[in-house]
Image 1 (cartoon, rainbow, N blue to C red):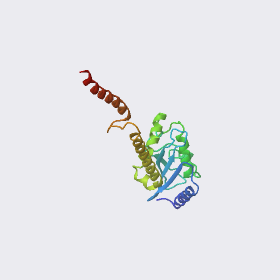
Image 2: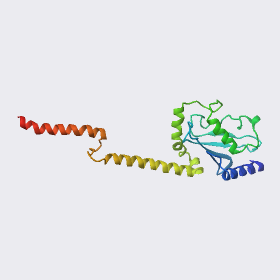
Image 3: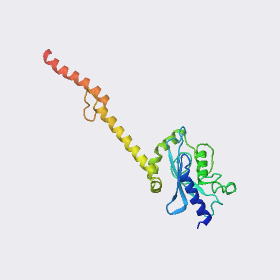
Length: 216
């Protein structure tokens, strides 16, 4: 069971995060467990993680802040293995370097900074820039399959669904505009290049039908 000092500290830190948000970082305690927090990191513009939203978990010991927490990430990023505790100076891998004054915001800011680097540690993996960008584009689709993410970060889920609907509408509008271009009507199921190939052939065929009786 968490100590009174631990509970008081975590409650204070949560209020601080709400009152003074850290850029590209959000975190909420689990509804039924104050010692388990879920975080969200947003990839910064100009990085390989741009557009990515990365969900993970912090597990605090009952002796926090005098002992460090563990940190893991759920969303595939190409930088960290999923569902694996990460070895960082502010995690339980290194209690000798832990500083009790560090806050949740400090830890997550450090995690995000480390994510942009190429340093190797337990829990880190290597991947190409293209793979990191591909995973960034798929990150919210992955996150929305996680019930806890949907419960704790409903605004992000709602924003993603709205953007998804807008993309589908834009694609449908573009297809409709192409189908209704003035001039030659597209046969059902034919693409524009098929139409422009088939129409001249049809004209030649009609001409041959008209000319042949005259030459017979």
